[in-house]
Length: 119
Image 1 (spheres, rainbow, N blue to C red):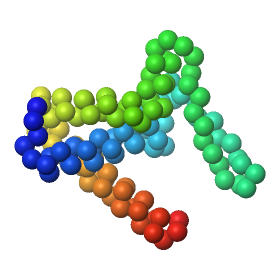
Image 2 (cartoon, rainbow, N blue to C red):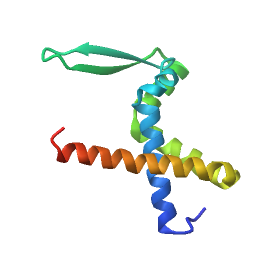
Image 3 (cartoon, one colour):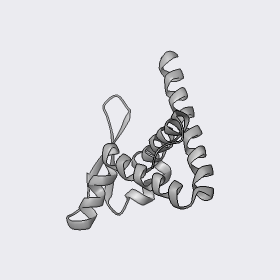
């Protein structure tokens, strides 16, 4: 599959970024990670709460735990999933990819704005 334009490449890139982040880090998808990863929260001496991931057991649970704890690994599979969906069911995939891309750009803008404001 060849992208029709550079714009499509960037749209896919932002969509992959956002979906990968959603699966690996966001609280809303912790139920997906729960069978494979135990998330341990520790209160540090300064009062901040740190979250650590402990991959569960062995076998298939370990495999998926390692996959879901690595944004590089998850990103490859998310890329493949979005590309296949776009190729096989474009009418369904296009609005989802666009939604994820817009959310990805918004997340990056929010991160940059926070850093510029000292947060």
